[in-house]
Length: 251
Length: 80
Image 1 (cartoon, each protein chain N blue to C red):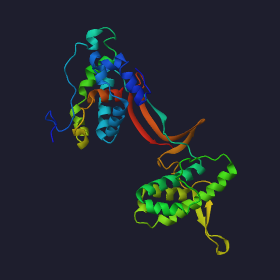
Image 2: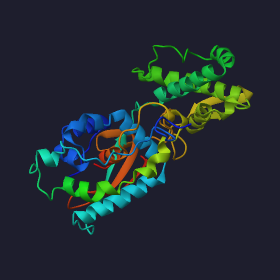
Image 3: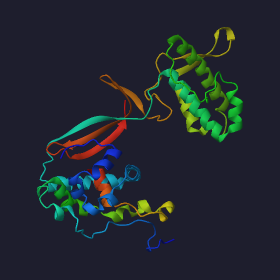
């Protein structure tokens, strides 16, 4: 027995093909197909358990008893770390700005179609277009576009910051936060209009990397760039039983 | 509202009934008696109290539809 890294689908696939799993789960051969838990059910059940402390308590209780029944010493344990890759595209600043605005407008169109229709006319581009590209290979063009999109973000911010409902949307709060982290407004020379300057480095520690998961952070480990969460597992060294786990965002 | 079996939801506990087609009956020596899976089945599997998970199935939408998959099996797969 050792640590197995299985996806939900792989766990479903293994169930009918592993004699040790069938024995462990007390599944007779004639009932194996009936007892099969498909990957969706498995995942949904896990999600339900995840909201409840009893899952962790049960896991601890069962693992300790299992270790004891196997005669395993718990004196030697080690903690491993690993990355849980999110299904998130790694966005450049160009992609981040575009996606932030698109997500906000998409939500606004759903909640307040009239308001959305009015405001999109003021923006520099159609953020809700179907053929939407989050990359720009031409670096100079990308830099110019970033400035234009920053103005769009500021326009949206100014338009809705005092709106009683829109200002409470999560997508609006994300937009406002990203604008604050990535841009700053400075007074124009000789009393001209206010200018928006892109910061060289984003402000603060908790930098938003994507509107789809504001907790996800990019981190580089060797050659790989990860956007997702970091996990820790404590493993007993003889049988590699997992004794405890913890997850946090990458930083 | 009760379902046709007099329970509040479609929650079902795993049947304790033994089967003729149990792997130990069909292939008694396929794995050694001290293999982890036998220890798990003997020592750990009975400790999973399905009643603790009954409230996960008490939502309105679960009062209709097919009965749940075995909680013991699902938890065991998650552990394995």
